[in-house]
Amino acid sequence: MAASGSAAADPSERAEVGTAPPAGGRVNGGRSAGRAGWLALSAAVLFVLLSLAVVRAPGHLLPTDLALHRWSAQHRPDLALASARALTVTGTGLVPYVLLLLAGLYPGRTNRRRALVAGGLLLCLGAGQALRYAVMMLIARPRPPLGDWATQASGWSFPSGHATTAAMTAGLLVAALRLRGTRVSRTAVVVIGLWGAAVGLTRVYLGVHWFTDVIGGWLMATMWLSLTAFAYVWRTAGRSRVSG
Image 1: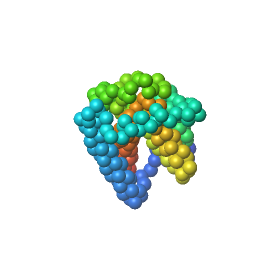
Image 2: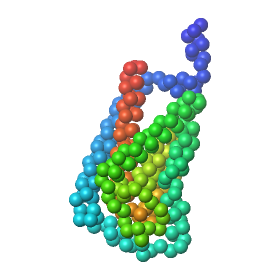
Image 3: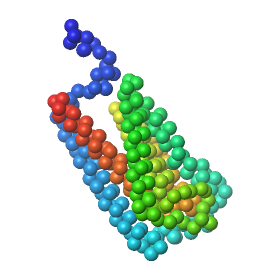
Image 4: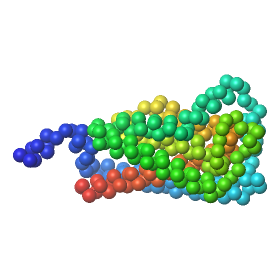
């Protein structure tokens, strides 16, 4: 009777606990973990190389930084400036956390599952931001001249907080969509990706960051998201091996 009651449990609860996937699924999971691990390592190496270049460069400026900064300061029509200001605020503060909280409710079929996903997304973003802050304080790169700023900013320059946060948020939003188990719309992925990239570029356009600050933010976000994905897939595959 106990076995019969367990078999009659809510399908959504059974889906949440999960059953051991076939061997092919475990192999694919191992490959996914491997790809995520290599991507994390590659992004980390590139980030370290860029950081060293920034620290050692005269005036902490690389060739593209000053040229793109000057171009941005000289090309700011009213509509473009207003649009950049409106977009840049979505990459910081409460907005990314609200987006992830809402996204965390999407994959879950039970309240427990929704709470776990939302909490995991928020924790991942918060930890990534803390890592970025520590690196920023360590490198202590000055921002562009204050007279060129077209919005408010604070703290050191490298890596860009807005670029890092928006890129992390974009990646986590796509991950939340994939956790649902249904096919993810390419249009949604493209729109989310463009938003994440555009927020970073507004920081250069508004004169508060050098271009390499934004590149550094994107690399850090890639490294952190890939490392998180590696840990998640590896843990999931490990539980599947135990279940199998």
